[in-house]
Length: 85
Image (cartoon, rainbow, N blue to C red; front, side):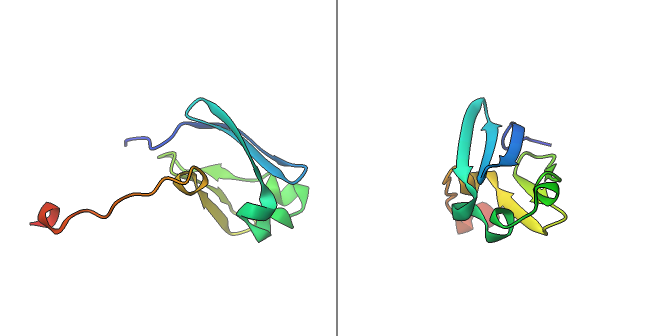
């Protein structure tokens, strides 16, 4: 399986999501990412799973998912019709 991103050092505290993505340390205010994460109890926010492909993060106790491409504002162009022929 091809990894989309290498994700590590994830923490949710003091109203911020901090993580390392592809070697870069990043931080995001929770209020701009997710209402569920922003209002979560510390015990709820600290339980998460990184997808094996490195595509995103899932918080099972909150039923919340965040895509890494979304965090990084990466947009993917649709595949052309010719690719399906």
